[in-house]
Amino acid sequence: MRSPLELNSMSLNPKTERRISQCIDEVVLEMLGKNGKQTVARHLLESVGLKMEEVPLKPESFREGLEQIFGEEGAEFLETQIVKKLQENLGLQSKSKLTLVETIQIIKKQGNSF
Image 1: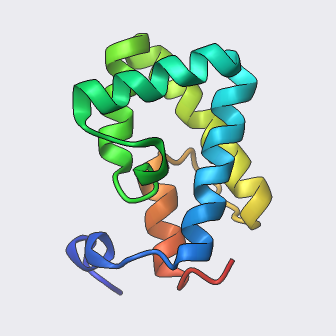
Image 2: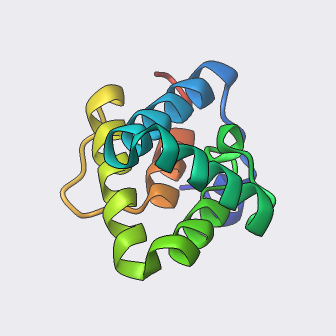
């Protein structure tokens, strides 16, 4: 089994990274609408220096930015919806509730074969 440090240093292949970004974009758009998505993107860039397309590589910063906007509960709700979408689209299954960070670590561990 790989250590958490090894998992964090593993990279996503470009195709998988795009699929994750697409799921995130779809959920944010569905939940917040076009203007809400633009507002979140602007806030992430200004507050934590994160572009939306970088979220798969820096999910911790994404969560931090969401908490600044929506508080802990709101950020958790949005993150849960994103994780559900990823699980559906990538065929991931889990018996426990996962965070976005944990979900991306699972994707890395499985070798990005999506």
